[in-house]
Image 1 (cartoon, rainbow, N blue to C red):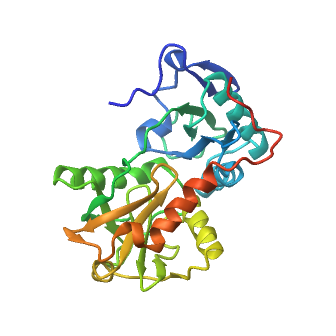
Image 2 (image 1 turned 135 degrees about the horizontal axis):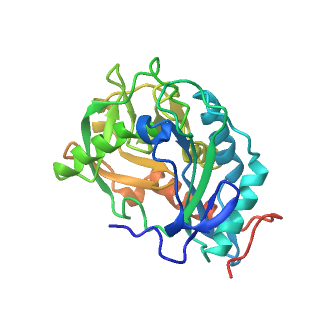
Image 3 (image 1 turned 45 degrees about the vertical axis):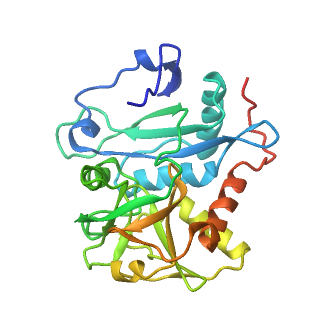
Length: 301
């Protein structure tokens, strides 16, 4: 099992940096009992000039606020404030390449009544590639993504991720690396915690917003594709379309950009190294380690 902290690890909790081993929360929290919280997954990287850079922090912390507001959680922090706190947290823990997890959670409340305030924590830890670095063997899940008329799919809410956990566990129990989930209409939606792209005849295809969480890494892939003059179509497609694709990949903050070896035991047609998708992967790795001048960038001690 991954070890996320030791006796010296610090986290940020409601205005203070505290030892992770000493941190406490209220076990009557509405978040614990009902999954009523929102969070972000953010990465920091040691850049090519030796500084530490959080990748797209504004986009992530803005989305944290939007997620909280979407599910009626009080939110009182500014993006600039949380970015600075996160850089301090990385420096205090001497982390460069790290995964960062801010969580907005609820106070004690066993009812469904709205809360007057929320709490916040920010954790960070060193993380190996989330799904490894080899191409993935993927299985179509028997579970669907939630109905967007039942949930705000744009909100990165903790409760939504039970769906991701059971889909991923099902795939791994059957010998696969990860799952691919469909929407309620039978269209390809996303992976547990990642968006999906397929490549066919020099064009990238990805599901449109609606039944998916349109990720920040997904947006970055769209930016890179535009720079590479690679056409992208945001359209609905089915598993049968993917089975005839040249290549496919998942993308997300944790997984970054990772190619698929096969779907439902059928390999993709092209050799990964020859695809435009592989060019996207390479360009993404270069992009996240670019040094960017910032008054909040804190070199790791």
